[in-house]
Amino acid sequence: KNGRTLTAIFKSISNGIPGGAMTAYTNIPMADRVALAHYIRSIGSGAPAIDEAKELSAIESFAAANDTSSRVRLPLELTIDRMSSEQN
Image (cartoon, rainbow, N blue to C red; front, side, top):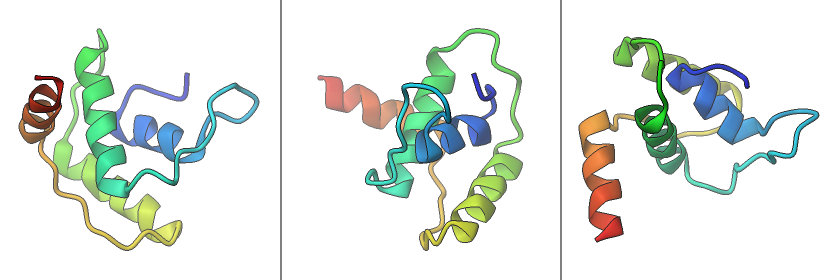
């Protein structure tokens, strides 16, 4: 609804969707929200190709503007491995 880029998905998780049923999930640690955004992109179809460095930089800028202090460096492969191991 708010976009299919990694940054748009991250912002939707962080801010919720105004006027919609989805609430903000700021209680989830930032690294986990990034991992969740990667996972959501991986199961969607037709998502645009991403420049991961650019997307993570945009997320870091968003986080800095919203008083989140940690830097994010969680590659998609690690996210998928982590999600797979948690399901087993």
